Image 1 (cartoon, rainbow, N blue to C red):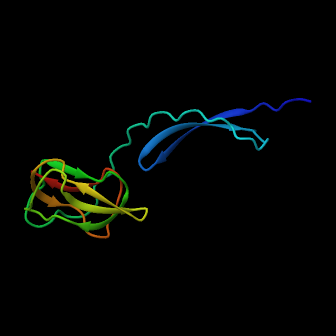
Image 2 (image 1 turned 135 degrees about the vertical axis):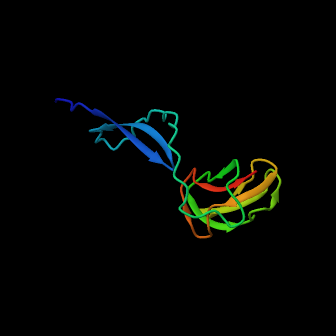
Image 3 (image 1 turned 90 degrees about the vertical axis):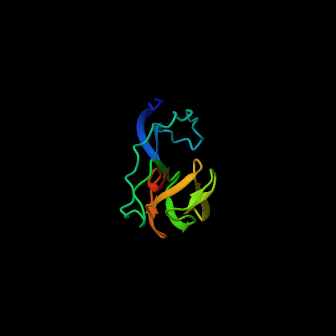
Length: 132
């Protein structure tokens, strides 16, 4: 009997903004599991453009960006422009996979702008708010 040669194919897959290089073996028809190589370290994905929403009234953009850590939907806005916040205070709450994910202030300061509205769909890395 002649054994069919298995071929390897390389693919690039993007999952939640992370890019992975994977290798897939073709021709494995035994039904047995095929050992997978450890995934390569994720490549840096380009930042998603900010949502097309105007900054909240009352201020220009601040120098500190608050960005979405994951794709999701804006569930609630906890802070408003001009409000003082402490490091770790929730500014925006995203909903992803039926979980609420707080996006927090990276440092003490004042919220300069809120760049999204409740119900907006955002990608990972999208600009949600700014602060000074």
